[in-house]
Structure formats: structure tokens, C-alpha cells
Length: 361
Image (cartoon, rainbow, N blue to C red; front, side, top):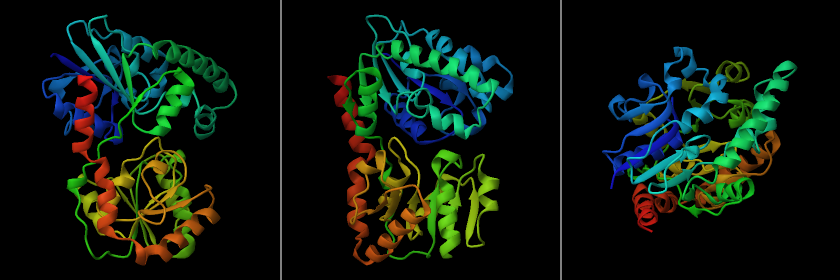
């Protein structure tokens, strides 16, 4: 069986890219088609030799850093890929990859991280975060209308959808009117060890963008004086530093090996944003660490209140402080080995078995 893989962009290594890496390991001979590729940032997982890019790759180098300016060209770019020689195409999509065109003999399975959020349920937040006002908002409204129409039309192209969470299943049903199979993303549980002691710090691992709500964690820990380490970079980094107290430390980008050490030695993991699924909380649970999470999105399917962590119910300082107080009170009752056992339900082994079964069906 001749297989091809498709992914929206290969410009950074995030949760969706880790899913793609497992697909690539499952099908080592399969090329990876993508709109844009940044060799410096992702070649460790995705060597250049396996990559087939769109015509957008030929645009000036700035396009990799400011690819949103090419958004209106992306539907055409994804449709120009030729998959006529493949038996199976497996796409990993949260925006455009599901929109590839295949012939009647080529099966297309889409692993959907989410329908295009900035075109649907996140459009208002996107406008606020990017300060889109005046004449820019006029053009943006036309772009969103175009993307919604294209996204809806192209949603019928896959032969099957696999959703990464119940949360995303609902979104696929709402915006596409389609049913989907549920297979949770893979977590490399075996990468982590459970340690009996911690170094008395709390941990955030995240891209530092507004919708991640890292500012909530920074404000809370600055207020209460407990040590918080923040791993990651992003456009909010300078702002977050400006509102932080000395007990909040920003570590920037860290290697996977370093992140592993920081997670294993942490007291608890802090996850203040809303994600479609969220792999990092499960990585923390793989190390036996409790998680404080916002009670919306994918964490409702992975965090068990009172057993693997606690929720806070509004994205406010007061609500988050209340959740942290409950986590600290229940700390003596958490069983690190049971927390890890829970995380094992989301392991790579389980994911691969489920994907193979879905393909064979």
C-alpha cells in the first residue's frame, strides 16, 4: 500500500507535529506534504528529504514567520498537490490539510485536531488578540467569509474523519455536519519517570501567546509568592516578564530532554488555557504530577478532579487561586503511580493500535 502524509505547516514542533511524527514512524516510506516547511526548526523530526512543499515555499523567507499573510492563497496551494499515485492519504489537519483533492481510488483519512478555529468559533478572539481594527477588519471579514465557505465545501473530501477528542467531535458535527471516530492523540508516556520528591516549583510549558492565558498563572504566582517556572517563547514573553515578580522565572525554549527533567522535578503542572485536547498535561501526568487546568476543552477528558489534579472554572485570578488552593489541600491524597496509570490510557501504543484498526476498517 502506497501512503502519503499531509500536514498544514511544518514551522514548529507542537502537539500536532508530535502526532505527525508517530504517523511518519508508522509509515517510514511515506512522503510528507505540507504548505510551508522550516528546516531549522523541525528537521530533527522531519528531515528535508521526506518533505514536499507547496508553491508558497518559494515566497520570500519572511513568509515562514508571517505565514498568516498568505492565508488567502492556502486553499489553492493545498488543492494543487497530486495524490493520484497513492492508495491512502493520511492528513493531520487543523486548518487546510483536510482540503486536499484525491481521486475515487485513493482513500483519504483525516486526523482532525480541530476545524479551522479562527474561521469559526475563535474568530472574535482572533480579532481581539491581533488588534484587527479599522480598514484591516474590513478585509479580515471578507477573508473569514471566504475561508468559511471553502472550509465547508472542502469538508466533504475526506473518506473518514478521526477526531482527537470529544470536544473536536462536537465541532466537526457542528461546522461540517459530519460524524467522526474518536482516537485520542499519542502521549510518549515511557519518556517520563515518576519521582518521589519534587523541587518545590510549579511549571508551565507553553507557547506564550494571549489565548494560552499564561498571564493568569504569572499574576497568580506573583501574588502568592510560590515559585513558578515558565518554559516557552512567544509574542507575549516581554509582557509576561513585565508583570511578574522575582519568584516567576522564564526559561525560554528548552530541549525535550530538559523539559522532561523540569516536569519530573516539578510539584504540579499549570495549564490555564483552553485547548482542543492538550498533550502537555498528560505528559505531566505521565511523571505522576497533578495538573491544575481550566475546566473547558480537552482537559475535561483527561484530568480527573481529586485524582489527577483540579480544575478552576473561570479564567479569572480568583477562580484560579481557588483551584490552586484545592490542589494544595489535596496534594497529600494524590497517588503519583495512579496518576501515571491514568496517563497510560493515552499512550503511543494505544494510539497506534487504534489508528491501524481504523485504517483496516
